[in-house]
Image 1 (cartoon, helix red, strand yellow):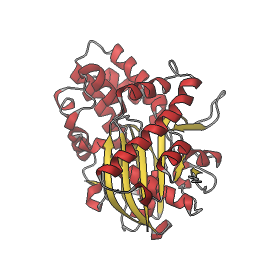
Image 2 (tube, rainbow, N blue to C red; image 1 turned 135 degrees about the horizontal axis):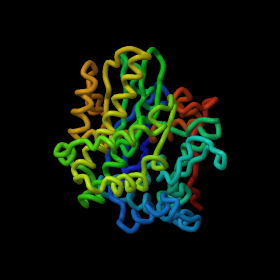
Image 3 (cartoon, rainbow, N blue to C red; image 1 turned 180 degrees about the vertical axis):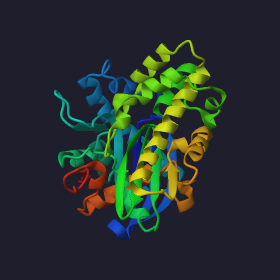
Image 4 (cartoon, one colour; image 1 turned 90 degrees about the horizontal axis):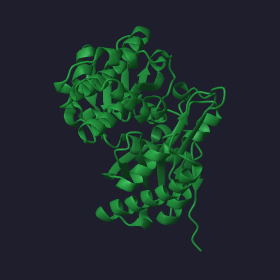
Length: 378
């Protein structure tokens, strides 16, 4: 049995999730027990720096290089806070698995750019500060094997949910919406489009709030049909799976352009429309999957979006024959599933086992994910 830490900082930028868990076994024998979990806010000045470097207009190599090390220090600082709060000794920790903060994810090659990805939060800094082994930079190995580098949590989904004898989908509502469908012994995993990303940005700009609590603002508005049609006509929604997306398509710049274009509409209507884009892009993908694989028995939601009652209720209305549930039903946490998943991936890496699901990422071969930094004590 090992005691491990998982660190997840997602595209929604709503804080960092830190999980402490006991783990034993590997692959299908893996067992994991939650010990502690916390979501901690970014310092305002650090959040501003992240937003600067993920925006091509304000980013530069010096900012990215500096922030890589600064985030490593910040992640370590927050881990120490969680350990102290839960009275866990640092010397007890066997390893840390850190996803890092995504700065850019180039899922498709173009004329000028190859498939590539960059997550920062320097692993060597974490290893030195936390005095333990650190696994980070998980996505690069899958891209090197000609995959999309995402989604990676599908490996965890397949590991822990294949035992249920039904067509079941594990769906994460973070900044981006992604699913893993387990059906007929196979797994299909991809990003359906935005989840909270566009909504959260618009809430900040229009209402000076970080998110639409319980979907209360969306419930008050009505659809702006022209805006809805404009977004839903994007090529991404018609692409076949496997596919992956992020801020490069659905980020702050695009959302701001929409806000500016439809500025004469009510603020509530903008939030409602963005919410319906999230909802319908999810429902549409499931209807395509049902045409291909038959009825989906259950969709298990996790991520911050599960707290948005407007989104969940509308998905229930659109998929009436499918059971809609939350991951708590299976003894896991909606808010910390991804951090837990990266502990599992880190454990596979340290046991020299591959951690990518090639049916989800499109990679040509299995790959051992992540780069390992060891702590050396003289």
